[in-house]
Image (cartoon, rainbow, N blue to C red; front, side, top):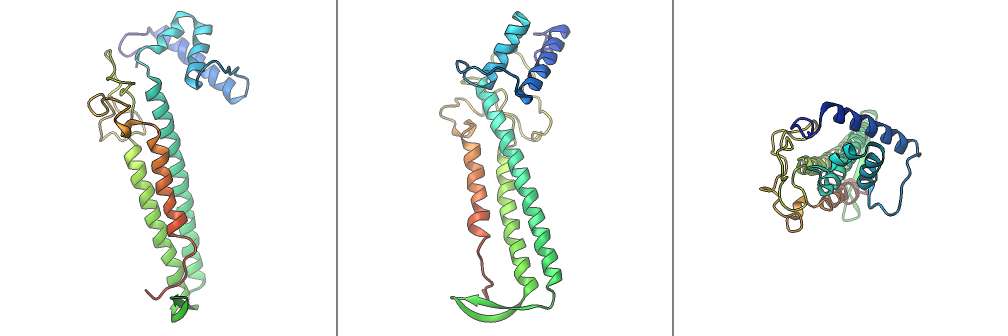
Length: 222
């Protein structure tokens, strides 16, 4: 973005990108020197760029907010987690469908009030779990939809203070909704929906469904 608006030259952009790639390799390989005096990974990366590129590295700080970065990191992490859980639930549904096909014609006693109530087909029993897991997947999909808006540009208090392309939708974000700006998230302290702490909490409440709503059920006549 900085190069697009003329704040970085092409050579400066290429140098920063190349150094960021090297830093990524060092972090992945466990060779990057982390220091306790630097607050987070963003400060470590910026400090490393400045040490290696001098004033060119300092330019990366322009129009950058760690509030945006932390919120973006958490959103991407939670979104990937939701996709993983959704895929596992889909596999589980397929397993129950396969079991239902295997048990076609098998009769089970359905229980209500801890007593046998009436006979049901085993296939109905297994498919009932598929329906429960489908509701769980719906809760996760709703959580994913709510968090899948880019927070880039909201910054710490006002909106970005310089000309930028931050409002342009980025790949994998919901392009039908406008990314966060000062108009939607005016003050991150009082606009809790822009706080990165909300997204893990949202996923936890969504994930509570599979634990509380889908496990340990018995066949029921109701």
